[in-house]
Length: 211
Image (tube, helix red, strand yellow):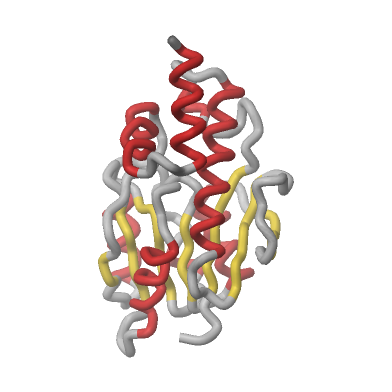
């Protein structure tokens, strides 16, 4: 489908503001370094996919982790649901939105997810996370009601998000399940999946410093 976008919702990897649930055992500086690596890997995968537009809805300021080719705009709204809705208002549709918590994504996986929006009757797609949240959502058109009022960052956010999509008349295609990096055991597991990535390299360095 022509005109698709890949939208990344991201937070600048500033110590004390990024990946704080990794502390302890990591320091705030180490957690921010791991967050930057996750963001850089995610954006590299996004840059390699076939979307026509690459977008970053950013909480904070851009840094050296941002590759060329991305349009950056600020997040707006008080809660995560409002920030998601505002980001989609800016992006429009059709497109796919992910966060910075799944550095194991690949261009092929993102293209697979985007490809579902080419199907004639598909208006939405949802990729749940193993912790009960979701890591990706695809929409044919932006729709604020998809997000506003949905409880976010809970163990049932994925179910709630799917329920909201169905209430609005969508029959969301199920995307592959991925593991978010929220806690240290998540970071350990994801680093093992992608040993040559920036994320895994920083992860190994952090573990070595803890010994």
